[in-house]
Image (cartoon, rainbow, N blue to C red; front, side, top):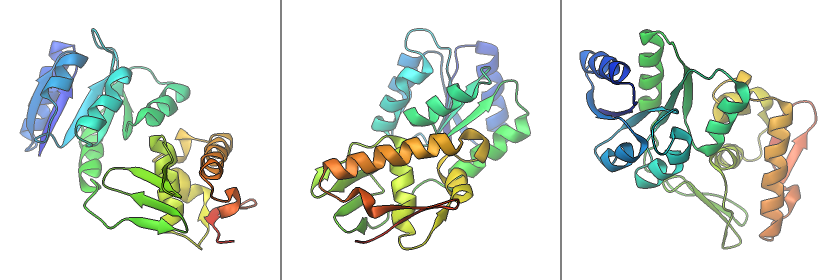
Length: 221
């Protein structure tokens, strides 16, 4: 497995590279956002991305990195702010770890992400909704829903469990990784956005049913 380290601090970059090589990984190092985009490609299995980078900052290149080769992106930042973390997940980050961090925690997060890398799978469907897990796109009545990463993960979870209730705790763990990353208001906002996008494409917004006090589920009309 090869990990791309995008970190402008030379000492931290070198430290991370040494740690990863010691634990059996290959590494590539970039010291700016632009260089990170150039080095990223099919040979990379995961990215460690610092936010404070010269030129293009980390948050500005997440979507470009994902488009080039959709691998897990773990953001590393000294900013320990819930709004910032939620914002990074919205942009497509798969995890967020605050500096300074313990090496053991970083390695655990890396190994967890590599274990859950998406494999090729069949398309998922529910009524007129079709989800392609490989391209992370969703169509409804033949129209692209243009979902954010979080919206896509949320819809995929509901469709995979269609007919069954997805509790709030399950949704938090599956979509936001852990409950502290989101709250009821955040979840409600994303459900509302999903319903509006489905309705605009011709699907009944009521296909996502609220199970009050428990969670949500897909419901055929």
